[in-house]
Length: 311
Image 1 (cartoon, rainbow, N blue to C red):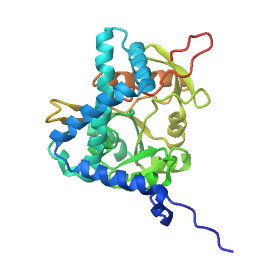
Image 2: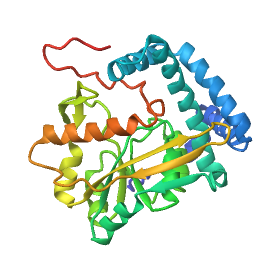
Image 3: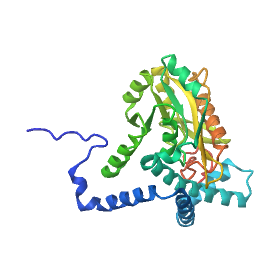
Image 4: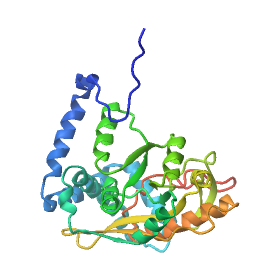
């Protein structure tokens, strides 16, 4: 008896035509229509939808405000509210930017500037793979598209629970990224690093202490992943900070990609010191455009013994 072939990411299945998936197909057609709208309409819609989300997603709003309180104690209550609302607006605008990257990439022509590309090129010229240390930006895949104009990035991703949604996202991302690597595929990550690839990796979320250590983030202890240290020790890859963001008038935005020099003496023998160092890099990146970060994630979910809960 023949075995059913294993599902491959991005593979179409006839079951996707069943009624249970019709809502997603309708949604995709709607998103494609949104992608061809003029930017003047897109960013206004993003602003409107972001405000609606801020007003109605109470739990996410509360988490966002609390994160900003912890990380930017110098902000007044009015500044906290204004910036928290802008986080949701930037997220919604980022969805339109991602749709443009997927379906209307010509929109970005003449809007992108990169700084520090030589750091990545020098590492690859030495035969090294590159682990690009970045953040969960509200630009989403638009940020990947910005990078792809100058080099071939791989990306680490978490598969979607809905198989149709996963197929659609994988296919859209295939136009941007050279390779998409499942976050559980450590062998694939190491193999691509050993082969000299540049891989975008974001070590900026709380996955508990089974996968990390406590290290200060904006002065507050936070569970910080350390998996990238093992990846680098095995692959001998270079660690290079990467950041991208939107700047200028929202009606006519520009985009910048910043690539910093490779970290020296990294990883060290001290995983807490390494985690602290990476968190400091992320802090400096986020201060450039604070609201273009997904602050609605519970970054301080894990607390050290004896410390009060933040949420």
